[in-house]
Image: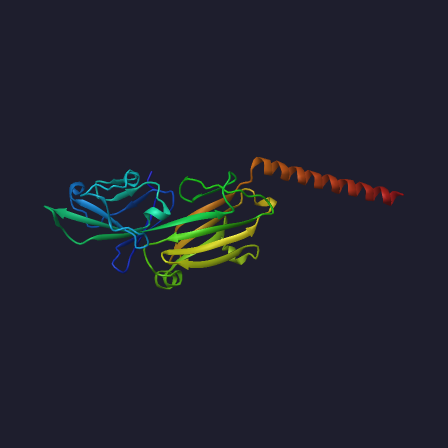
Length: 271
């Protein structure tokens, strides 16, 4: 199933900007498509931050990256479908080029694919989940328990070499951590929110100490463009059954101690 994506008029030679979360399926439109385009279309991929040359994905010479090629398909309108988008391998600049009798027809159609991804620290074990907000995508698991600190790192992987500050000022692109009600978590002193950037990446981290009542609590990393939601990734805290059992036992023990204490106090008052 192709998930809904958002296209925004681009700048600097890019016709469209597509924002999507890792694990989803993307569809990139070819704005200069010709009729009977399947036999006349080449999609070319370029990522300035990877140590590889321009790669011809579909059309012409067969791509040697078999695993990746199996995730690609061409629609009748020349749109490029990418299944199970990955942040490292798929973000970048895509160019749709049309040919007739081995001669290019019309201008290139360039699409920048921006991928949002959340990673979690501490390391992995089956007790939490992270997925996109618009589909049931693959989950990442993390060992978590009440009293432990957890850090969620939300990264936007982009073709552009602009810093996050430049993207905020020039394009209005922004990352936020919010709760289930959509409230910015920067307003809650319980959470430490930090922003940073690297070439081709915008990063915002959320760090907090987990509480007993955090089980099934949801946090979301939202990507907005000019104050409009483009995509988001949600992270749901899920304690293991053993952790839940221990927590309930601790709560029952605490309740029992309170009852014993209250009973002793009543006895002492009656003496």
